[in-house]
Length: 417
Image (cartoon, rainbow, N blue to C red; front, side):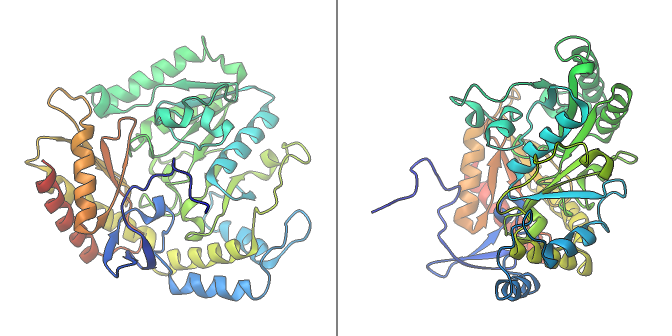
């Protein structure tokens, strides 16, 4: 009898039978408050009626229309509708299946467009598990260990993780930009760098928002040196941070290439990159394609997702409920000495556990995470040391559900410390 790979381990003991909104129901009928959202995927909640209806209708019409062979209406409509939410300069889109694929497509485009070999990423970033994407990932050793040699041409610069350095945000930004400038004249000569790639909020690396001043500094240096700026919005896009795109927290900054996935289609596999038509046309002929990219059912689900996000005001809801969640977590942690930091943007919030000397307290984070699952609150950990517990509620989450989650978390904390 075949079995799942033993390397695949579950973050929670739940065996899901069905999902509805912000809740998952297990095979024994127990309800769980799902603040993982499938790692930020089910942005409209589990089985939103409009998404379900759109997918069901499309399944009965056309399931697979391979888009380098034929065009289909969901694909064309989605391209048109994305034009309403993408930065105006990014008017050309290429679809794929996963975030990793989209990251690699962005790297390929950047290299083709500039003729340069190097891609500069930032410490703690997560960009995927495939060989090229893993080469740009430093969120944790598990992605890279035992997997070399990885793609060449990946170089790294410090990320302004102020809490880690015990500095103010301004000091961390100043340090990180100074180190970047040093690298551009030493280990990564600017004339050889095709692109900077960065997450507007570190995801697997610890849910650390990228300071707007740092993004502005990257944009200025990219323009000065002819380097492209790639925003990896796989987890931050489609309203997760309280703005439609995470990079929009840095006023005046527009990336040259934007990567989207996860919440794009409410659980159906779909990703994409967006760039200007001029830049996209510099990709070499035949370099963009794939069997399943732009799948008709996934595109129909993405269209419905976009409609729900806009009609139900989910971007604004993420901002409002995110502030409520952040404030509530800070209040719950006020007297817990093991909690070193509570941070986030929108509905992308984290609690970092540290020892008195500032070192990672992984053991308490693991206890708190497990205690939350026992209470019926599903969460995930992240960070290189696994000492960060992250909260990723669906964008439909209400104030009452935030408060429900906070009450369960408060009990979990009490049981863990």
